[in-house]
Amino acid sequence: MRPLTVLLSSTGLVACLAAGGSCERPAAVQVPLPPGTRVGWYVTIDGSSNGNGTNARPWDLQTALGGGNGQVHPGDTIWLRAGTYAGAFHSELTGTAAAAIVVRQYPGERAVLDGRGATSSTSRGDMVIVNGSYAVFRDFEIMDSDPSRTLDTRPNLMVAHGSHLKFINLIVHDGGIGFYTYPEQTDIEIYGCLIYNNGWQQPDFGNGHGIYAKSSAGPVYLRDNIVFNQFGYGIHIYANAGSGGVNNIHVEGNVSFNNGAVDADPANSPNANILYGGGDPASGGSIVDNMTFFSPNVGVQNVTIGYSSTANVDLTAQSNYAVGGQTVFDLGFWQSLTMTGNSAFGSASSPVNLRDATTSGFQLNGNSYYRDPTAQAWLYNGGSYTFSGWQQATGVGATDQAQAAMPTQPRVFVRPNQYEAGRANVIIYNWSGQATVPVNLSGTTLAPSDAFEVRNVQDLFGGSVLSGVYDGSPVNFPMTAVTAVQPIGGAPSAPPRTGPAFNVFVVLRR
Image 1 (cartoon, rainbow, N blue to C red):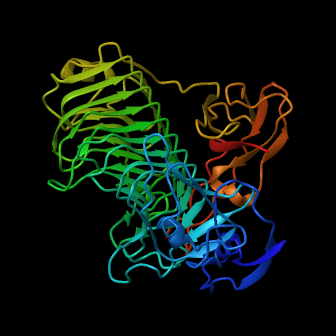
Image 2 (image 1 turned 90 degrees about the vertical axis):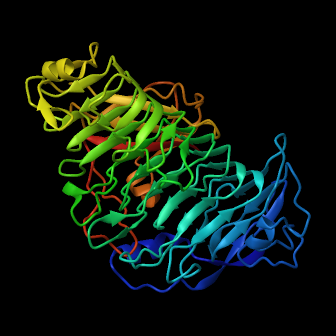
């Protein structure tokens, strides 16, 4: 067994900083790591550019991301061993369509990339820049342990500057912006990532988003991510006029909640859980099967479809489930907007604000609104209407339905992970306020006799809230409120406790 000098896991450092301390980096300690048994190249925090990528002579991270002195080829895997990798990095890895290069955390270990102090102190820099193409980055953690939360110099953590890239099951937190995609790139997928506590507090409002995506041609896919408690927007599909476009971006199966909740004034935070649209017209995109939630007294607009007065081209929004905010669905200006099968909830919310006076291109069908239909809560072109009055004034939503009563039974969404067997996201809206909610995990690829654990994403490293051996029966998920992990360095407002009304979990096979 070869002793390696590794930095302690970031867990203790995060806890110290969240408490408002001015903590130093943890001291290096000798932790014996057993030799890796997986086929591929090896990286450790005390690796070297003079290594050869083996167990005995591992590389440092930058050498591996640069191609390992010419030794890394399409189809290869690079394993990140345990420890904290301090610095900023750039990847030049280039695989092929048939044989991508994979960079991933070694199983059972925790590899953390920490960008504290590694980028510009005068402007927001990029911490991990991914150039190259046909590369996959998965399973590890990216963060910035700098405790300052009032400066816009916190870095963009993971930046897609190449094409044909996948980012899978990463944990991305406490940066300036979690993910950023440059507009010229094509075929980008961000999948199954946990993204939280990114951003900073400006004098007027919180800024810094979970995902900031733009695209000239696309496609860009944002799928099955869990995005919560940013200072700014959760999912921010946006480009300034002339800066790259909002084209062919697809937002599918994500859960985005309480973004803007750590703002100094969360009740009036302008940051939506999902924004689709910018200064450039949006076209060719979709928002499908997403789930959102705002706690009481958090959020103005929950889902914003169309930014400001930009005249957009077309978009499909289907089967989204959105709870809370002053306005649930805020609709801008579109030549063609198709909204079908969406659900909006909020006993004091405006279910829909249709800002465009011209509605000939709006196709609203089969949507459900949980709000008193006699309330003047439906908005159109600056006016307030009852539900039937809104239908008459706009000429849309003939097959939409509204009711005053909220659901009386829990609504459970199970999203099996497409890249990790036995893993799934579980999202529970606990309308009945039950202490536990039964969840059918039969579609998650868990097999009878598989050991599993369940973690509440708001305190991911706080231990499992449930574990056992799967026998095919429904599993009772605890809906107890947990205290969400605080942003490193603190925030003007503490993240709300969402349980028992709402919780999000990750199921993992063990």
